[in-house]
Length: 121
Image (cartoon, rainbow, N blue to C red; front, side, top):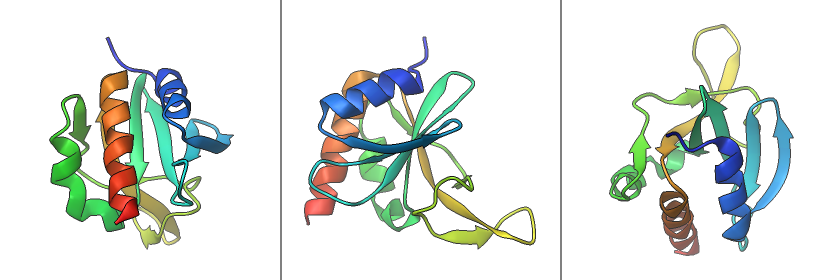
């Protein structure tokens, strides 16, 4: 059974994250003690957390969490307005980030704990 974006959003709020806006199938969140945005995206019933590309150096740390899997390529969406842009499939730049599939509420909680610890450094 997949872990939906709605279930993930509820778990993130329980973990102290705040939701700043939701557009289409993208929901922006921020950890409790930070202004670092990340996004929750749902596609085909599967929830993903998308973080800024600068955190790519921590990919292995996030993937070491049971229930978290990194998606191979960068994830692109024009709604992720706090992220950097690059040329992808058109002449116009589009926002992009690193996406991770989330399989359980425990995995989501551990992911946010690890992200918060990284941001605190």
